[in-house]
Amino acid sequence: AKSNGCMTCHAIDTKKMGPSFKEVAAKYKGNAAAEGKLVQALSTAKGHPEVKAKGDDVKTLVKWVLAQ
Image 1: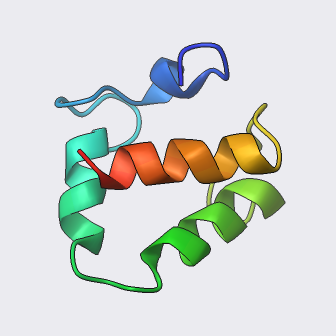
Image 2: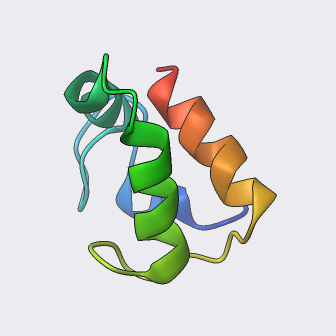
């Protein structure tokens, strides 16, 4: 998350420019489609600014955020 610039706008447990990772995890808790939806948003820069991470790195980051 740090090396891909995520921490510029997000923090683990406090809101910055974007929601905290814990807020994101709470929002999508129990939603089976959450991982796919977030990976899609991050990979296509639709609904979220373009990210440096690509491919499997995006999937890994999304899984990590949802585990918060």
